[in-house]
Image: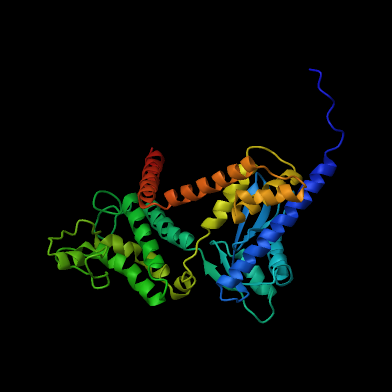
Length: 376
């Protein structure tokens, strides 16, 4: 093909590119921390969301608090203990590296990392507070109820009937209870008592019948989700068609008790989720797909580029070009801005109510199909 031989060495160029990416990503993360401190009334004690991610079997740890700080990138498989130790190491360094203290720890149900931080007393006398991801807590309701459905299969309840079936606890009912449980948390972030009241309102709403309506805890007014209380205002006739038998509600009462504990709800008052972590993970694996093996340098390239674009948009890649001595042209800048605008429009579409309802229906259908496959 009459092509010239390839350059003998790319290492010099790779090292230069990697160093530039590292510098700009560090600047981006420092700026993000600074923004978080300002948003916290210039208080440097801020929250951090911690999550783990992996490329095939090679685990690494990502620490996020509006700054997407990649704190560990190694090629060996990490045990849970090793991962927890590295979390402690990088949280302890935050005072010097980020000029901030992570005094609130937002994590999922696996609290090993938090317990390690608490035992290590990383900030001396200042305790680190555990926060719960509202999304994970909401899913606990569905998981617990589905487990009851599974464990009670073929067992007669106190009324002599099975737990599932028409007019009883179905996967659709579980999804509905989980949905309203999440809303009860999110709409009452100012008070644990209001949150608890709203959750028990779901229980007694399901317990209500024509002969014994129990809607005292349900919200009042024309905009209430409770059809019974809404009918009092509008004058419309209401039928309790969404009620569940008392035998079923007695079976699931412990779940409601556990998920309305004061200590748990107190950890949800912040109203935050780990969704930004999932979004950041997606940005990483778009660059370095899990289906393809990559070396550590490629992994670093992908993660650092994801940090820059996630925090400051694709247009921030211009800083990388400039640091490398490359002056980007008009079309390059325009193309990067178009990508950022598309991201914003897509984000707005995703949070659209119609889109949200469509996704909920899709999830419900998937669970129904999973149950049918399980029964077969």
